[in-house]
Each structure stands twice: as C-alpha cells, then as structure tokens.
Image 1 (cartoon, rainbow, N blue to C red):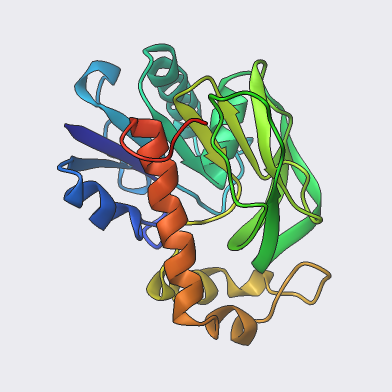
Image 2: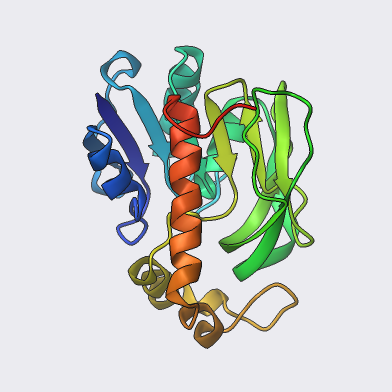
Amino acid sequence: MRAHYLQHVPFEGLGSIEPWLKAAGYTITVTRFFAGEELPTPDEIDLLVVMGGPMSVNDEDEFPWLGREKNFVREVIEAGKPVLGICLGAQLIASAMGGRVYPNRFKEIGWFPVETVASKNPETFKFPPTVEVFHWHGETFDLPPGAQLIARSAGCEKQAFQLGAKVIGLQFHLETTPDAAHALVVHCGDELLPAQYVQSAEQILTAPAETYRAINQLMGKVLGFLLGTTGSRS
C-alpha cells in the first residue's frame, strides 16, 4: 500500500500522520513542489494527503505548479482514491472540485475550538461535539458541489467538509506536533499580529502535551475512517 503526500514548503510535513501510516503498513512517498519534483499517476497510489502551506490556491502566477496540483487532486478523487487535505490542502480540494477560495473574515492562528456539524448521513465522519485544535489559516472556501460541512468554528464557518465517502478537507491541523508548531512560529511568525483569533507565539508553544496527543489521536481516527479501518461511519 502506498500513501503519497503533496508538500508545499519544507517546514510543513506529515507530523503525526507519518508514524500512523507506517504502523498501518503504508509505504510513504512525496512530491515536494518547492523542489520541482514530479507527480505520480493516480493508479500508483492508494491514499493521497495534501499538506498545508503559506501560499493561496489562487497564486498560480507565482506558483505555476498549483494548476498541475489541482488537476492531479481532481484525478485522484475521480479515481475513487481516499484523499485528505489539510489547511491549504483542503482549499486545494475545494478549488479542484469547483469551490471558490477567498480570504476569510478573520485569520485564525493558534489553539481554538471547532464544533461538529450534525448530520443524519451515516457515511459522514463525526467529530466530537467540540474539540480544541490547532489553526493557521487566513482563507476560506465555498463547499464544492456535493460536499457536506462537518465542522465549524466561531472564527470560520467552514472548518471541515466531506465529499463522498473517501474525501475529507480540514482547515485545521490535527497532525501538528510540538516541533511542527515551533517550525510554523519560526517561519510564519510575522503573521502573529494581535487579533481576535490570533494567539501569541507563547500561547501557541505552551500548549500541554496532552493537547497534542488529543489532536493526533483524532487525526488517526480521520485516517482510519477514510481507509475503512477505524472510525465507524455511524
């Protein structure tokens, strides 16, 4: 089994997703767009993970590979493969499948709660009623046709969506480890300007270990759901 991920900047990697996939028996490969690496074909992979990054999905003039990436994401989805998008990755899924991506009313950076959006559909992933997660985003999106909203927050209405049974987009980061949070503060700290939903570097980096464990465990449940191994669709 082969899991492939799309990486946009060196400091946003798989985090807790990597050990989960290895424990599940997956071989992991990557396309690093910042290094000019090539994409596989959809039939070569069994799972696609699309990571975050500081650019916008609309920055194709500056990052020409974004167009190729969106086409690839669409091809993988249409091939029926499981796809997980995180932050920019969720926005790329939305854009690739017909949704508009644009600035959110607020930037949301730091530890803030999201809440589940109730659904009677047994095929949707169920988040806890409320859970504190890690955010670093300034844009939002319109849901692509056929997608269902599955999580929201006070600062951003569209926090997570599901498209069919095998595609989930998360605006927030469940894969974040202490090292990953530190890397974001180092590389993107200029965004930490005082605002309603923007925490300071100190607030971000002093989150307790159990908070990371909780989001990483939830990340595992999302992956298990997409792969049909855990995370009951009920």
